[in-house]
Image (cartoon, rainbow, N blue to C red; front, side, top):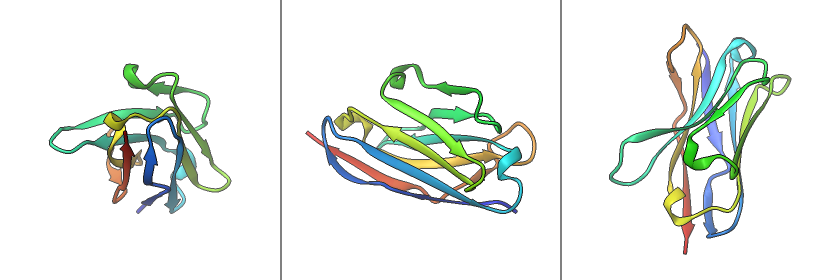
Length: 118
């Protein structure tokens, strides 16, 4: 069973940058599509970005295009989310997820807090 662990969250001022990492255990990482989601206070969880198993295709929430970049390194079993020009409304708990068994997000990390101050 794959397990995921996020890191890299923290507090940053508006306009700053953070890079989140998602480290995976288990042998299925390199064959799994991966994604980032976030949940802001008082809001539903929302999709942020996804990358296919090869790293050759990415997708983003429309509102985040141009500021966030998703990537992965299968040799390190790690996925990344580079976040630039951060805004206070990006404040949320960020989760990584995997489509480890079938086309659903069925493996989740514990989340990492990102707080952007104005």
